[in-house]
Length: 178
Image: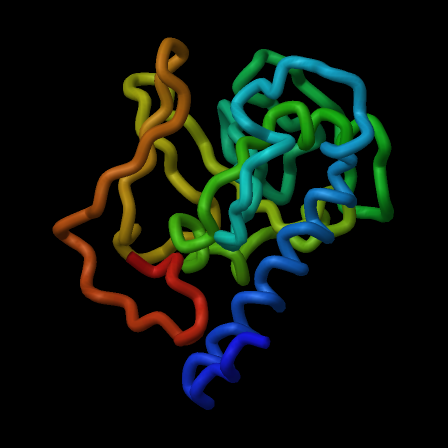
């Protein structure tokens, strides 16, 4: 019979078992154990990632109060209204969304238009300027902590903005701040 672990090690063992069970539950939900053999593109079925994320919807032009259409980066122009759920608009929003770490867009989340939340959850609108590849977040009044750039060849990239002031991070249990 093995010797019992010291109390500190036993606590770490319990924590490890909880984390392992959480990972196994996530894998079961993804059906990685029972699905037929297939290419795991980008590691989507086997990636363990608990970094909080948000959706970034890429637009050609910022919609204003008088707008009746939204022009997306892929060239689609969809009519919209400020009313309830709109299926064609929701579909276009999802087609033009990119999942990004939440800390890149956290400062603009609260200032998104009300109609956006009715059609897509956890999303932030960004306008890709015509003259450059810079993404301007809608609802971001102050200097952005991160500069977002879009390239048709490489996709979305970000760099830390040295001109912005430090924004304290409020969740001490989330390591997505760095």
